[in-house]
Picture 1 (cartoon, rainbow, N blue to C red):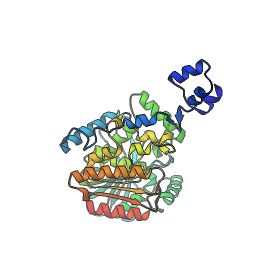
Picture 2: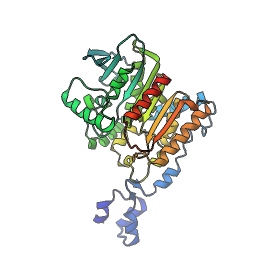
Picture 3: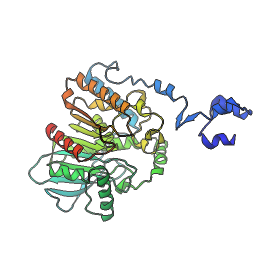
Picture 4: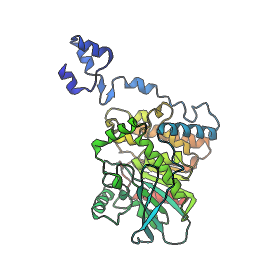
Length: 386
Protein backbone atom coordinates (compact mmCIF):
# COMPACT_ATOMS: atom_id res chain seq x y z
CA UNK A 1 0.00 0.00 0.00
CA UNK A 2 2.89 2.36 0.58
CA UNK A 3 3.25 3.29 -3.07
CA UNK A 4 -0.42 4.32 -3.25
CA UNK A 5 -0.11 6.85 -0.48
CA UNK A 6 3.07 8.32 -1.89
CA UNK A 7 1.05 10.03 -4.61
CA UNK A 8 -2.47 10.37 -3.25
CA UNK A 9 -3.66 12.28 -0.25
CA UNK A 10 -6.46 10.17 1.21
CA UNK A 11 -8.44 6.93 0.96
CA UNK A 12 -12.00 6.70 2.28
CA UNK A 13 -14.99 4.41 2.79
CA UNK A 14 -15.29 1.07 1.07
CA UNK A 15 -12.05 1.51 -0.85
CA UNK A 16 -10.13 1.86 2.39
CA UNK A 17 -11.73 -1.33 3.67
CA UNK A 18 -10.76 -3.14 0.49
CA UNK A 19 -7.15 -2.08 0.88
CA UNK A 20 -7.15 -3.25 4.49
CA UNK A 21 -8.15 -6.72 3.28
CA UNK A 22 -5.41 -6.91 0.69
CA UNK A 23 -7.29 -5.91 -2.47
CA UNK A 24 -5.23 -5.92 -5.65
CA UNK A 25 -5.56 -5.22 -9.37
CA UNK A 26 -8.47 -2.92 -10.38
CA UNK A 27 -9.43 -2.18 -6.77
CA UNK A 28 -5.96 -0.86 -6.03
CA UNK A 29 -5.93 1.21 -9.23
CA UNK A 30 -9.29 2.76 -8.32
CA UNK A 31 -8.00 3.71 -4.89
CA UNK A 32 -5.17 5.66 -6.48
CA UNK A 33 -7.67 7.89 -8.29
CA UNK A 34 -9.62 9.15 -5.29
CA UNK A 35 -8.00 12.56 -5.57
CA UNK A 36 -7.69 14.38 -8.88
CA UNK A 37 -5.40 17.40 -8.75
CA UNK A 38 -6.54 18.43 -5.24
CA UNK A 39 -10.18 17.68 -6.14
CA UNK A 40 -12.00 14.53 -4.97
CA UNK A 41 -12.83 12.31 -7.94
CA UNK A 42 -16.55 12.89 -7.25
CA UNK A 43 -16.22 16.67 -7.53
CA UNK A 44 -18.54 16.84 -10.60
CA UNK A 45 -21.37 15.56 -8.40
CA UNK A 46 -20.62 18.22 -5.77
CA UNK A 47 -20.54 20.94 -8.43
CA UNK A 48 -23.88 19.76 -9.81
CA UNK A 49 -25.41 20.40 -6.40
CA UNK A 50 -24.39 24.06 -6.52
CA UNK A 51 -27.59 25.65 -7.81
CA UNK A 52 -27.21 29.06 -6.09
CA UNK A 53 -30.89 29.14 -5.06
CA UNK A 54 -30.69 32.59 -3.45
CA UNK A 55 -29.43 34.31 -6.63
CA UNK A 56 -31.54 37.18 -7.96
CA UNK A 57 -33.95 35.74 -10.53
CA UNK A 58 -33.78 32.29 -8.93
CA UNK A 59 -34.67 33.26 -5.39
CA UNK A 60 -38.35 33.07 -4.40
CA UNK A 61 -37.93 36.65 -3.10
CA UNK A 62 -39.15 38.82 -5.98
CA UNK A 63 -38.93 42.31 -4.52
CA UNK A 64 -35.40 43.56 -5.19
CA UNK A 65 -35.05 45.54 -1.97
CA UNK A 66 -36.15 42.53 0.07
CA UNK A 67 -33.83 40.28 -1.92
CA UNK A 68 -30.86 42.57 -1.28
CA UNK A 69 -31.48 42.47 2.45
CA UNK A 70 -31.94 38.69 2.42
CA UNK A 71 -28.86 38.05 0.28
CA UNK A 72 -26.67 40.43 2.29
CA UNK A 73 -27.81 38.80 5.54
CA UNK A 74 -26.88 35.39 4.12
CA UNK A 75 -23.40 36.61 3.19
CA UNK A 76 -22.91 38.19 6.61
CA UNK A 77 -24.02 34.97 8.29
CA UNK A 78 -21.21 33.11 6.53
CA UNK A 79 -18.51 35.64 7.38
CA UNK A 80 -18.31 34.06 10.88
CA UNK A 81 -17.07 37.40 12.23
CA UNK A 82 -19.46 39.63 14.15
CA UNK A 83 -20.08 43.20 13.06
CA UNK A 84 -17.86 45.76 14.75
CA UNK A 85 -19.97 48.88 14.23
CA UNK A 86 -19.78 49.89 17.89
CA UNK A 87 -15.98 49.81 18.09
CA UNK A 88 -14.62 53.41 18.07
CA UNK A 89 -12.14 54.08 15.27
CA UNK A 90 -10.09 56.37 17.54
CA UNK A 91 -7.90 57.50 14.61
CA UNK A 92 -4.40 58.87 15.10
CA UNK A 93 -2.98 60.89 12.22
CA UNK A 94 0.71 61.46 11.49
CA UNK A 95 1.68 63.97 8.81
CA UNK A 96 4.04 62.93 6.03
CA UNK A 97 5.85 64.93 3.35
CA UNK A 98 3.83 66.86 0.79
CA UNK A 99 3.06 65.11 -2.46
CA UNK A 100 2.58 66.72 -5.86
CA UNK A 101 -0.80 68.39 -5.35
CA UNK A 102 -1.80 66.41 -2.27
CA UNK A 103 -0.88 65.82 1.35
CA UNK A 104 0.30 62.54 2.81
CA UNK A 105 -0.62 61.14 6.21
CA UNK A 106 -0.46 57.82 7.95
CA UNK A 107 -3.48 56.93 10.06
CA UNK A 108 -3.80 54.30 12.75
CA UNK A 109 -7.29 53.16 13.68
CA UNK A 110 -9.39 50.32 15.08
CA UNK A 111 -11.29 48.52 12.34
CA UNK A 112 -12.20 45.86 14.90
CA UNK A 113 -11.86 45.52 18.65
CA UNK A 114 -8.93 43.14 18.17
CA UNK A 115 -6.08 45.36 16.98
CA UNK A 116 -5.01 48.72 15.61
CA UNK A 117 -4.31 48.98 11.89
CA UNK A 118 -2.05 51.46 10.10
CA UNK A 119 -2.99 52.89 6.74
CA UNK A 120 -2.04 55.61 4.30
CA UNK A 121 -4.27 58.62 3.65
CA UNK A 122 -3.81 61.05 0.76
CA UNK A 123 -5.79 64.30 0.49
CA UNK A 124 -5.83 66.66 -2.52
CA UNK A 125 -4.88 70.27 -2.06
CA UNK A 126 -7.85 72.60 -2.16
CA UNK A 127 -11.20 72.98 -0.53
CA UNK A 128 -13.26 69.87 0.14
CA UNK A 129 -15.26 67.90 0.64
CA UNK A 130 -13.72 65.68 -2.03
CA UNK A 131 -14.76 62.42 -3.66
CA UNK A 132 -12.83 59.49 -2.19
CA UNK A 133 -11.51 56.06 -3.09
CA UNK A 134 -11.03 53.12 -0.75
CA UNK A 135 -8.04 51.48 -2.40
CA UNK A 136 -7.72 47.74 -1.75
CA UNK A 137 -4.42 45.95 -2.35
CA UNK A 138 -3.91 42.63 -4.11
CA UNK A 139 -2.50 39.34 -2.88
CA UNK A 140 0.21 38.34 -5.34
CA UNK A 141 1.96 36.12 -2.75
CA UNK A 142 4.01 39.20 -1.87
CA UNK A 143 3.56 40.02 1.80
CA UNK A 144 6.30 42.50 2.75
CA UNK A 145 4.21 45.25 1.15
CA UNK A 146 0.44 45.71 1.19
CA UNK A 147 -0.76 49.30 1.14
CA UNK A 148 2.63 50.19 -0.37
CA UNK A 149 1.70 48.35 -3.57
CA UNK A 150 -0.71 51.18 -4.36
CA UNK A 151 0.55 54.23 -2.43
CA UNK A 152 4.17 55.29 -2.69
CA UNK A 153 5.76 54.78 0.75
CA UNK A 154 7.70 57.75 2.07
CA UNK A 155 8.88 56.17 5.32
CA UNK A 156 10.88 53.05 4.40
CA UNK A 157 13.46 52.75 1.60
CA UNK A 158 13.35 48.95 1.62
CA UNK A 159 9.61 48.92 1.14
CA UNK A 160 9.92 51.63 -1.48
CA UNK A 161 12.23 49.40 -3.52
CA UNK A 162 9.77 46.50 -3.26
CA UNK A 163 6.84 48.76 -4.10
CA UNK A 164 8.55 50.16 -7.18
CA UNK A 165 9.26 46.66 -8.44
CA UNK A 166 5.62 45.72 -7.89
CA UNK A 167 4.35 48.83 -9.65
CA UNK A 168 6.67 48.13 -12.58
CA UNK A 169 5.38 44.56 -12.85
CA UNK A 170 1.65 45.20 -12.64
CA UNK A 171 0.86 48.93 -12.85
CA UNK A 172 3.09 50.36 -15.62
CA UNK A 173 5.34 51.84 -12.94
CA UNK A 174 2.55 53.95 -11.43
CA UNK A 175 1.37 54.21 -7.84
CA UNK A 176 -2.38 54.13 -8.39
CA UNK A 177 -3.20 55.89 -5.11
CA UNK A 178 -0.91 58.82 -5.86
CA UNK A 179 -2.41 59.13 -9.35
CA UNK A 180 -5.91 59.32 -7.85
CA UNK A 181 -4.88 61.94 -5.28
CA UNK A 182 -3.43 64.10 -8.04
CA UNK A 183 -6.80 63.83 -9.81
CA UNK A 184 -8.65 65.18 -6.76
CA UNK A 185 -9.60 62.09 -4.76
CA UNK A 186 -9.03 61.41 -1.08
CA UNK A 187 -7.40 57.96 -0.95
CA UNK A 188 -7.32 55.48 1.93
CA UNK A 189 -5.31 52.27 1.74
CA UNK A 190 -4.72 49.83 4.62
CA UNK A 191 -2.97 46.50 5.11
CA UNK A 192 -5.01 43.33 5.22
CA UNK A 193 -3.93 40.81 7.85
CA UNK A 194 -0.64 39.25 6.76
CA UNK A 195 0.75 42.14 4.69
CA UNK A 196 3.04 45.06 5.41
CA UNK A 197 2.76 46.26 9.00
CA UNK A 198 0.48 43.28 9.73
CA UNK A 199 2.95 40.70 8.44
CA UNK A 200 4.84 39.61 6.61
CA UNK A 201 3.17 36.25 6.27
CA UNK A 202 4.73 33.53 4.14
CA UNK A 203 2.87 31.72 1.39
CA UNK A 204 3.06 28.40 3.25
CA UNK A 205 1.56 29.87 6.44
CA UNK A 206 -1.74 30.96 4.92
CA UNK A 207 -3.58 27.68 5.14
CA UNK A 208 -2.59 27.12 8.77
CA UNK A 209 -3.59 30.68 9.63
CA UNK A 210 -6.99 30.18 8.01
CA UNK A 211 -7.59 26.80 9.66
CA UNK A 212 -6.73 28.26 13.06
CA UNK A 213 -9.27 31.01 12.49
CA UNK A 214 -11.86 28.28 11.83
CA UNK A 215 -10.79 26.43 14.98
CA UNK A 216 -11.40 29.67 16.86
CA UNK A 217 -14.90 29.90 15.44
CA UNK A 218 -13.90 32.73 13.12
CA UNK A 219 -12.75 33.28 9.54
CA UNK A 220 -9.77 34.91 7.84
CA UNK A 221 -11.86 35.89 4.81
CA UNK A 222 -14.65 37.08 7.07
CA UNK A 223 -12.28 39.31 9.00
CA UNK A 224 -11.03 40.92 5.79
CA UNK A 225 -14.61 41.49 4.62
CA UNK A 226 -15.62 43.12 7.90
CA UNK A 227 -12.50 45.28 8.01
CA UNK A 228 -13.02 46.53 4.45
CA UNK A 229 -16.62 47.51 5.18
CA UNK A 230 -15.49 49.31 8.33
CA UNK A 231 -12.78 51.12 6.37
CA UNK A 232 -15.44 52.30 3.92
CA UNK A 233 -17.51 53.72 6.78
CA UNK A 234 -14.45 55.47 8.25
CA UNK A 235 -13.52 57.05 4.93
CA UNK A 236 -17.07 58.21 4.25
CA UNK A 237 -17.21 59.80 7.70
CA UNK A 238 -14.16 62.03 7.29
CA UNK A 239 -14.97 65.75 7.16
CA UNK A 240 -12.79 66.15 4.09
CA UNK A 241 -14.85 63.54 2.16
CA UNK A 242 -18.18 63.88 0.38
CA UNK A 243 -19.92 60.82 1.83
CA UNK A 244 -22.12 60.50 -1.28
CA UNK A 245 -19.08 60.04 -3.54
CA UNK A 246 -16.98 57.20 -2.13
CA UNK A 247 -15.76 54.41 -4.42
CA UNK A 248 -13.92 51.13 -3.85
CA UNK A 249 -11.17 50.14 -6.27
CA UNK A 250 -8.88 47.14 -6.42
CA UNK A 251 -6.83 44.81 -8.60
CA UNK A 252 -6.76 41.00 -8.27
CA UNK A 253 -7.66 40.13 -4.67
CA UNK A 254 -8.25 43.86 -4.25
CA UNK A 255 -10.88 43.62 -7.01
CA UNK A 256 -12.64 40.85 -5.09
CA UNK A 257 -12.49 43.06 -2.01
CA UNK A 258 -13.92 46.02 -3.95
CA UNK A 259 -17.09 44.32 -5.21
CA UNK A 260 -17.52 42.48 -1.91
CA UNK A 261 -17.33 45.77 0.00
CA UNK A 262 -19.87 47.34 -2.33
CA UNK A 263 -22.18 44.39 -1.62
CA UNK A 264 -21.80 44.70 2.15
CA UNK A 265 -21.59 48.47 2.61
CA UNK A 266 -23.98 51.22 1.57
CA UNK A 267 -21.13 53.69 2.11
CA UNK A 268 -19.73 52.66 -1.28
CA UNK A 269 -21.36 54.59 -4.12
CA UNK A 270 -19.45 52.83 -6.91
CA UNK A 271 -16.84 50.09 -7.29
CA UNK A 272 -14.19 49.23 -9.87
CA UNK A 273 -12.81 45.68 -9.91
CA UNK A 274 -9.89 44.74 -12.17
CA UNK A 275 -9.10 41.05 -12.75
CA UNK A 276 -11.29 39.24 -10.23
CA UNK A 277 -14.71 38.08 -11.33
CA UNK A 278 -15.81 34.61 -12.38
CA UNK A 279 -18.37 31.91 -11.88
CA UNK A 280 -17.34 29.59 -9.07
CA UNK A 281 -18.05 26.32 -10.88
CA UNK A 282 -16.13 27.46 -13.95
CA UNK A 283 -13.14 28.37 -11.76
CA UNK A 284 -13.11 25.05 -9.91
CA UNK A 285 -11.42 23.07 -12.67
CA UNK A 286 -8.19 21.02 -12.60
CA UNK A 287 -5.13 23.21 -12.86
CA UNK A 288 -6.72 26.39 -11.54
CA UNK A 289 -4.73 28.28 -8.92
CA UNK A 290 -7.71 28.22 -6.54
CA UNK A 291 -7.30 24.48 -6.06
CA UNK A 292 -3.96 24.98 -4.33
CA UNK A 293 -5.67 26.34 -1.22
CA UNK A 294 -3.36 28.83 0.52
CA UNK A 295 -4.25 32.23 -0.94
CA UNK A 296 -7.81 31.09 -1.66
CA UNK A 297 -8.62 31.21 2.04
CA UNK A 298 -8.73 35.01 1.93
CA UNK A 299 -11.73 34.67 -0.40
CA UNK A 300 -13.43 31.61 1.05
CA UNK A 301 -16.62 31.86 3.12
CA UNK A 302 -17.53 28.29 4.10
CA UNK A 303 -21.00 27.23 3.00
CA UNK A 304 -21.87 30.40 1.08
CA UNK A 305 -21.72 28.69 -2.37
CA UNK A 306 -24.72 26.62 -1.30
CA UNK A 307 -26.69 29.85 -1.74
CA UNK A 308 -24.85 32.41 -3.89
CA UNK A 309 -22.23 32.53 -6.63
CA UNK A 310 -19.59 35.28 -6.80
CA UNK A 311 -21.54 37.47 -9.27
CA UNK A 312 -24.68 36.94 -7.19
CA UNK A 313 -22.90 38.52 -4.22
CA UNK A 314 -21.62 41.38 -6.37
CA UNK A 315 -25.19 41.90 -7.60
CA UNK A 316 -26.26 42.94 -4.10
CA UNK A 317 -24.65 46.29 -4.95
CA UNK A 318 -27.01 46.93 -7.88
CA UNK A 319 -28.05 49.34 -9.23
CA UNK A 320 -25.02 51.36 -8.14
CA UNK A 321 -22.32 51.98 -10.78
CA UNK A 322 -19.90 49.04 -11.05
CA UNK A 323 -16.96 48.36 -13.35
CA UNK A 324 -15.45 44.94 -14.02
CA UNK A 325 -12.34 44.47 -16.17
CA UNK A 326 -10.77 41.16 -17.11
CA UNK A 327 -7.85 40.13 -19.29
CA UNK A 328 -8.47 37.54 -21.99
CA UNK A 329 -4.98 36.15 -21.32
CA UNK A 330 -5.51 35.92 -17.55
CA UNK A 331 -4.96 32.24 -16.70
CA UNK A 332 -6.39 32.66 -13.19
CA UNK A 333 -9.89 33.28 -14.52
CA UNK A 334 -10.97 31.05 -17.42
CA UNK A 335 -12.97 32.75 -20.14
CA UNK A 336 -16.03 30.58 -19.46
CA UNK A 337 -16.14 31.78 -15.86
CA UNK A 338 -15.83 35.43 -16.83
CA UNK A 339 -18.57 35.04 -19.42
CA UNK A 340 -20.95 33.35 -16.96
CA UNK A 341 -20.29 36.04 -14.36
CA UNK A 342 -20.78 38.92 -16.79
CA UNK A 343 -24.05 37.42 -18.01
CA UNK A 344 -25.32 37.18 -14.43
CA UNK A 345 -24.27 40.73 -13.66
CA UNK A 346 -25.97 42.08 -16.79
CA UNK A 347 -29.20 40.32 -15.84
CA UNK A 348 -29.23 41.94 -12.39
CA UNK A 349 -28.54 45.48 -13.61
CA UNK A 350 -30.93 45.04 -16.54
CA UNK A 351 -33.67 44.03 -14.14
CA UNK A 352 -33.13 47.37 -12.37
CA UNK A 353 -33.24 49.28 -15.71
CA UNK A 354 -29.67 50.35 -14.94
CA UNK A 355 -27.55 48.44 -17.44
CA UNK A 356 -25.80 51.68 -18.40
CA UNK A 357 -24.34 51.79 -14.87
CA UNK A 358 -22.55 48.47 -15.38
CA UNK A 359 -19.26 48.70 -17.27
CA UNK A 360 -17.91 45.29 -18.36
CA UNK A 361 -14.82 44.90 -20.50
CA UNK A 362 -12.42 42.10 -21.40
CA UNK A 363 -9.07 43.28 -22.73
CA UNK A 364 -8.10 40.85 -25.53
CA UNK A 365 -4.33 41.39 -25.35
CA UNK A 366 -3.85 41.56 -21.57
CA UNK A 367 -3.41 39.08 -18.75
CA UNK A 368 -3.45 39.59 -14.98
CA UNK A 369 -2.35 43.24 -14.86
CA UNK A 370 -3.68 46.75 -14.23
CA UNK A 371 -1.59 48.71 -16.72
CA UNK A 372 -1.75 52.43 -17.49
CA UNK A 373 -4.39 52.29 -20.25
CA UNK A 374 -6.68 50.27 -17.99
CA UNK A 375 -6.06 52.74 -15.17
CA UNK A 376 -6.84 55.70 -17.39
CA UNK A 377 -10.18 54.20 -18.36
CA UNK A 378 -11.00 53.47 -14.71
CA UNK A 379 -10.08 57.05 -13.75
CA UNK A 380 -12.33 58.47 -16.46
CA UNK A 381 -15.13 56.17 -15.35
CA UNK A 382 -14.76 57.25 -11.72
CA UNK A 383 -14.86 60.89 -12.79
CA UNK A 384 -18.09 60.24 -14.68
CA UNK A 385 -19.93 58.36 -11.91
CA UNK A 386 -18.70 60.35 -8.92
